[in-house]
Image (tube, rainbow, N blue to C red; front, side):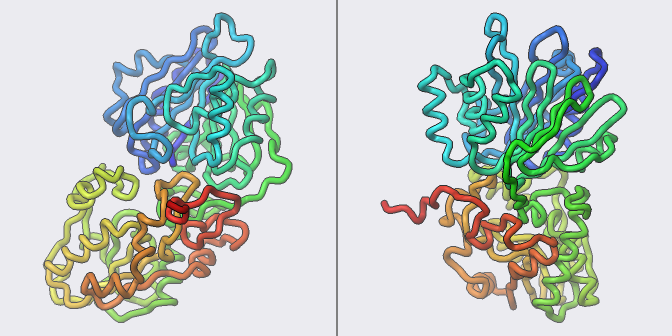
Length: 465
């Protein structure tokens, strides 16, 4: 999983790097392992800079002095393929056919995860391509660099047709920017327009912060090309696209102020909370949320039952605190321990409902319950605005095996008993899809149901030892 931004301006003297940085900052919730920006103009080659860490710490005014260009791409990275190290913090760059002096003339960023790419990687190596990183995005670069020329667009679309999995890709070739989405559209990609040119991003939130007017989604199995701030082409590259957007984007990953399918993510999550209240009502004095991604669901739950909601009982210790779910395993415990605090006098002797968006590894929820118990809550009920996560995600979320998931080993009732709370209930799969307005067979809910829209590699837990 990543957040990606691409910008093409008409003015050859325009500088897009500060705009890309602003867009990446808006998408920081999608990846916090590293960030990178690459730019180009009509005369000089690529310039790029990236590093591990957060956007605010990586890009400075001094860095922007070396990032001059009117076209560019960038990403914030959440490591699913390849470690969170500096070698993986740069967009893959390559040399397509007929480039003078083998000058690097294309670059890529992507969001999602490729599957069954080991054979493609071996093919690239057999043709002399040398991999410089561990990322699956570089497999696309390797296929492009070893593809027959001379037309980049045809080569790019041909390479896309050979990929499996979930991907949204931005490819910069010379002065032309391509945006493409996999045939199932599992990972999002939207585009908008400013007076200076065109902006692509993973979420509408980035378009809003860049004052770009929303033009639409890049459709599943389709591409859009832009040159010097003007759209030069758009078409389906896949003959039979089949939309299956990820429901977990709506549950957790996407920002509440982003728009999907004509609705804000906040509205969708509030409806999930209302569905949860209809399925699992309970009497209590107060509803609270685990900030920030569950706040909207908690509001919906509280309103449906007419119970008071307070957003400031359980507080984040400070912003920007990293999201513990997408933190690397070594840092998840540290982040989770220091992330929340409870105002004890608002909890003491009260019946509390704690609403969370999901329980995956069960790292954070027990610590929150312990804080509420220490603060003197009389009775605690857990309500989760999604079903138990019971299967791996092979499409860009770092759940490599069901061995990592608490639902593999324990039922909600068992978790409730261990935590010493009165109840723990989850929203049903049908209730979640109803709230999201996603048909069962036209969405990806594999991490909840174990059913995926396309073939996936086997879970290591199911493979013979």
